[in-house]
Amino acid sequence: MRATDGAIEGVTLSDHVELQVIGGDIPPKGICGSGLVDTVAQLRLVGLLDAGGKMRSREEAPEHPLSDRLITIDGVRAFLLAENVYLSQRDVRELQFGKGSIATGIKVLMDVMGVTVADLDEVLLGGSFGSYLNPESAKIIGLVPPVDVDRILSVGEHRRRGRQDVAPLLPRAADCLRATRQDRVRRALRTIGLQRFVRVGAAVSGAGDTAVKNLALLICGALGKEVKTMVDEHGWDVDIYGVPAMHHFYPKKIVDAVDRKLGQLSTGYHRVRGCLRRLRDGRCARAGPRTLRGAAVCADPTATRCSPAAISVGLRTSARQRSS
Amino acid sequence: MFAGSDFGRIADERPATFFLTDWLVRNFERAVIRGLGLDRYPDLKPVYFQNYTDLLYLAQFVDPRLIEKAQEIATYLGLPLEVRHVGFGDLETRLAELVEAA
Image 1 (tube, rainbow over the protein chains, first blue to last red):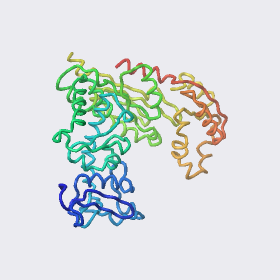
Image 2: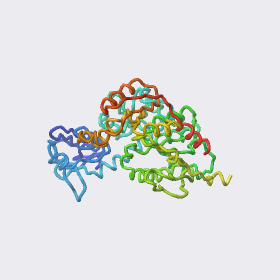
Image 3: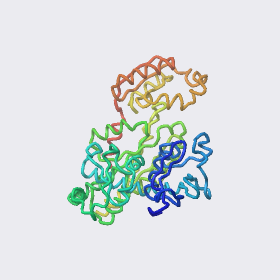
Image 4: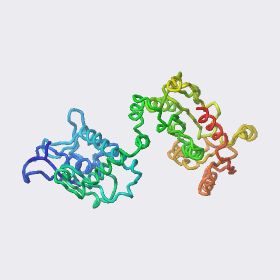
């Protein structure tokens, strides 16, 4: 809800629930933005929310002092903050989407500018929402880069108020983006796993780009360090993806894992390619040409009996190459 | 693959060899002991390992800590340990073929 009377704007969880309600001593009617961020951060801190954002159920946390607050509304998990006011699993997911896009934006900017968290002097929260947001909570949920809390500052609505000391910072970031060659932005995007969006853009423009690597190596996780070292030493322009090494104990899982991974990668890479011809159980993962240009490498860590046949590639000229 | 063409020969001469790699040494506890359930059923150890006579560690990186750890594994398995620094072996050649052919 909007940040008006009756909105929960601050939450502290321990063995009980403490609420800060706008308008003072009145019954809470809903949660506003800062309260939402607070609640999620606090749930995370008291262990009722896992790192992936999944809420625990009462059955999963029977010993927890707040377990009687864990409820189910129409089959959806929720945390009861006050009478008739609860935060559902769905609310958490929506917050995650929003948080993800903001955090990604920050990450891309930082990558483009070539700075790391250690280089940040201050994190400035703008906008009216920013001025109410609890910096600590914003940091806990990963909305802002992990700097010391006292370096996360709310600057309010700087533009409207003409905060000259702050406003110049934003144009600087924008200039930096403009001035930077587009492919650098693409590269920055790629490192955080947004290949598919970048790829869509590139396909439309038809520009020959080198920023996105052509080749994906899908490897057995047990070879991760080795392959990464070789790729670095040779300076190969490839992206490395792994399939969990522990699947060797359940070889059937390898096929599914490879299949799934190929499915994910097919949106990110040029074209066509390869299947794992032979896995240990002889089944073929994704037989036939795939819209993936990649290769798969597999080793058997349990005996290191990695036969050459376990490596296979199916090469086919990509549509792009054929048309050129 | 790490052992290259030697692998076939070793497998012929000493078929009862249990192989280790860097990864396997690093993850022995997780992959082998817990992976095979030996933490829960320690009496299965002889069932899995009694037929092995040798332990050959094909090392990729030179790392004294891993060798030390391999020694502990040898003690655990009760097998004589041999360490060979084989580097990446055929993996590198094959990977190069693969990448450069693309």
